[in-house]
Length: 392
Image (cartoon, rainbow, N blue to C red; front, top):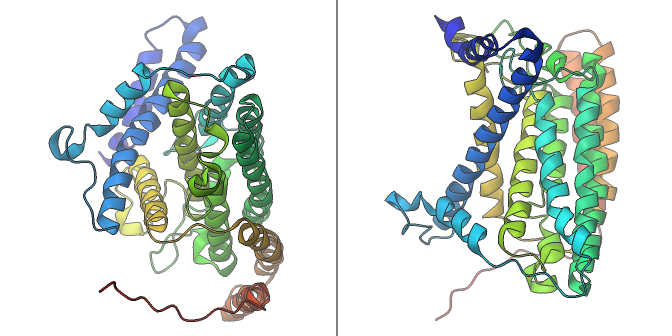
């Protein structure tokens, strides 16, 4: 019964594919998988927008959307209708073709990367031997779309926002990839399916064999999350759209449905990068404890995904935006050295015999550089305790 529930969507797909002639079955199977991915994650986008606005309202002690529909949960539908019917304004001097293609160049790669994410047991569109490499290669195309949007608008604020965004994305893409290298080394494969399979077992205590439960895996996961926030332009790394400095960043000259596509692309990129983090460090679709193994695999994947989304919402409502110099210093003086040292730590973990000595050595190799690099990053900064006073 448990296995049937876990494989219900796989079985349903096979039944639908079996209804068509055999020569058309590969095409129909691909169409069904693509439609499912777009439908599920587009719906998740709508749900996340309302949950984020309500969550930020709760954090900031104010009301979130509460007018459209029961408890405001039809607000995403109202926003979508507004985006569809709003006038599309294009600057007279803009490059019309590039200006039109830029949002599409952002959305399409954001959906393509889902093809290598194992959403559940036997639930992956394509099992590439180089799935992780494919993910990063396709994801890097978003940087081109950002430049296209900034350059084609013929606006100095738009161009400045694009340059800042590209500098940020390139700077944090390096530690993002390096944090994944440690997992690839341990597993010995770039296949996302094999990476999840390497974490499907359980320890003697019943705890999942996830990489995040190791010193190098925990450090790599934290580095991955920070770099992912910067790649997705999430707070406190949302400098490309610094309203107080450059109005709205690289999409300042976009309105209507084109602006909505940028909004959709950013969230799809966030979901995708969270999905990769789950695959690399959180066991993918596997359960955290052995006694919870009866829960369907896809339920675990989406539970972890919603947990990471809630974390990003919490961070957005808590931390202030960084300055550009702080952003770059943190990437090159802390994130990059820590990611490189974490690769060495993973190698030491692999070659040392199991036991407490391995845990102790690898923990020191992670904690020592963290303290030293952190002190070096803050050296010379006169940081004082902040005192808050209420107006009288």
